[in-house]
Image (cartoon, rainbow, N blue to C red; front, side):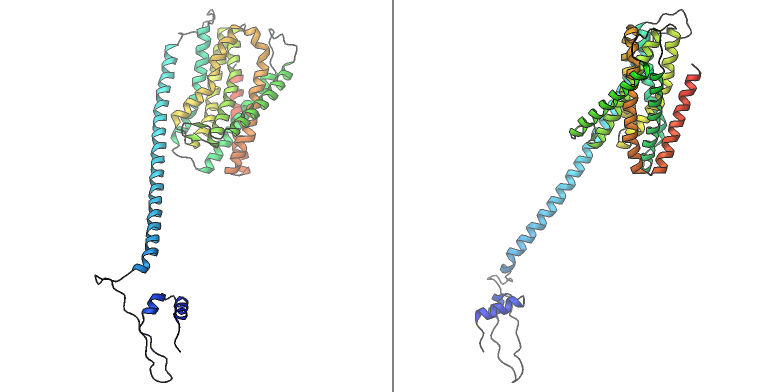
Length: 384
């Protein structure tokens, strides 16, 4: 029975054979009776130049070739973009580190140029604005030395980042406790406020909590904020820590100015400034161990540590000049800084430490840091 073209085309399609090739097959003669005819394969069609004709594959081959070429080009472009981004980040990091060293040199030059001469041990010396500013400045600069213990660490793994956050939380908790105690027990004969010191400290604590919550809400709404090579969540975390430690320094600056303007004048002011300078070193360490795991260089971290304490010399001078006006506000400022710092210690650093380690490690590290910090503070107070 002779098959039609359509039947042959359907048979060819079912057998993955091109219908044109089937049509070109020469008719086969039946073999012996009872045996099926033997199929002969058609010779490949040739073009005029004698080369095989692949015209029926041109479309598919072209599409596949174009697709492969496009995918390869896209991969090459992606690799080039990644390399360009890496080079850009590295260049920005190097530039930022150079600027940090320049700033450190400028800070050292200011410290040397503003030295007022020997003033401690001279009971007859009357403190001046220059003296008050210088001791507040030295107290602020000492915060940058908190980075030194971390200069021997090349890279921190995730587990040790969690431990560092727990240590920072313990230090901040100890600082908050000291601020609350200092505010609640504040007494001065020139303090003419009608509100008790504990009440003013509690009011300041509430204001500090509200302020830090508002600051966090603002930072969360501005997710595109960027500082140097930091962006997104890292930038918000860094800014939150810097804000809290800076607020803490406002009250310390007022304390320096008030101590120079009190009855004991120069002697008490120098001692308070020296005590705060020692106290600021572990606080700088607490800031540094939050910054360094976020790809911030050690020089840049030292700058940020100093920045958090710059309000000390800036607030010491007006507090010294208007000591009677600043005294009633001192407990409020202490409570304000303590409340903000306590919130960050518990709600930010401890939670992050727990996520990177575990409950036991977080509890042990933070408690040990808290005990050491309180011991250092108590030693300083005993020598007052």
